[in-house]
Image (tube, rainbow, N blue to C red; front, side):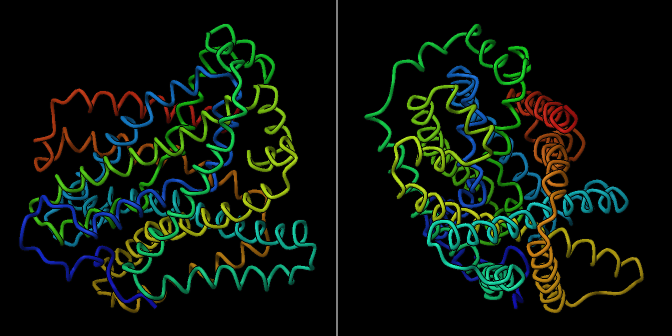
Length: 438
């Protein structure tokens, strides 16, 4: 099992030479960030974003990069502000806010990410089960065995350590992007100018009324958390920050910002091209129908174009997306779980062997994810949704609060981007909370 502490991927990398030069490890992490953020949810993003016409999609296009970049840069700077070179986010929180606050935030951090890991375990089992029975027409193994094979297979990657986790994630990004861009280009000849007729507040109102009777502003308001969580990769930010600090030392903040910017540009270009291509190909009514059927956009397109091969592509791209996002979220869930255990031991005046702890954490994740994937509980999506506002608080508000309160972060104060992050964070949190109850 993994015997390395989070952030060790670049421990052997040279810290000499030009720190501003782009290294292979920077590319690996850039793709790892992309892999954590862009998962199977992108196959539902065109439906959620485009159902009310082109205006919310253009809003997403304008806001996606600054929202994603400034928020994740703030969280990265927060992790880098700790005095310990290898201190992860759970340790930095305790250093800045004290033991009690550190315990609570670590607990929230874990329970915001861990349910997402369980959802991915269920999703990969459902995805492969559907692929075998509906597309290949063969009998699937018993669910408990299928879940054990799939979850165990993904967890086997974890056993090789963080270095291999990030490398596997970065490799999986290439086929994912290739398929996403290929489908975006495939739809271009089918684009219709009808989408331009939805480019008004009146059209948003009409589409919103048809899909649920919401007002214009509520529709646009509810688009914000869709953007936040579509590009969210906060679970891997701590591991990324620690790894880059070990590699670049004092130059880590500038290099992290550059890697983040590159990753976010890649995210916005590929994902928004796919979303826009879908919106120009399908009408608002088509997207509403896909929403009502609770199917991915590729599943809907396979019927729309009468091309069965799209169903195979949808299953494959979803499989790849789930694996890479599972691995990225595992790093965050492990940090949270390890932090809770280490605090419990420290409260008793004891220390814990990190190698044994990592092995125990991996076993815990394997067993619980396998059990949940086998049982397939319907309540899991609700639990995952509860973590949404918590993630938004940790990603948007906590780093901005630290800038005003923590001496090590005051050098980042006085920026307009800070105000922007706070406003967008409050909007995202309020909208995500609203969606839980209405």
